Image 1: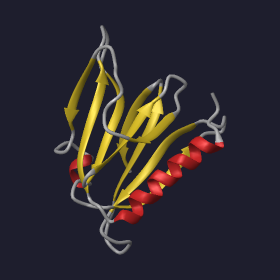
Image 2: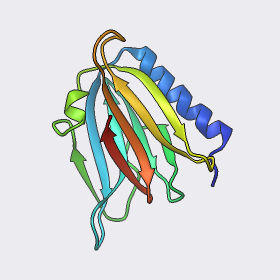
Image 3: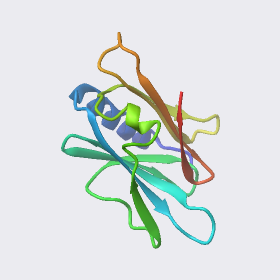
Length: 141
């Protein structure tokens, strides 16, 4: 399914409010779908103070960004804290300064790039979150 204008507008609104909140990233949790093969990263929860944002991999290889209270209900899952793992440990404790959405040539909203820094004059931790093969891939840039 090609991403709709309203889905993209919602993602932009959520990211814009995080960038303007000055709240630092306080936690990162992953929700893995566990089956016979390797675990699949299906969802990330980014916590900024008292609010959380969820990034979900959809079956059509697009990304969904939503605010909310809990992980999606997966039939077989395992949650894990990623605060002390790269690239997240360099971002925890820093506010989200810049955020970009990525839409591929086929019209799918399939990624975001997030810059965590105190100001535009300090070095940033830049993280890309992409959906590839219905799983979330995280890479530091």
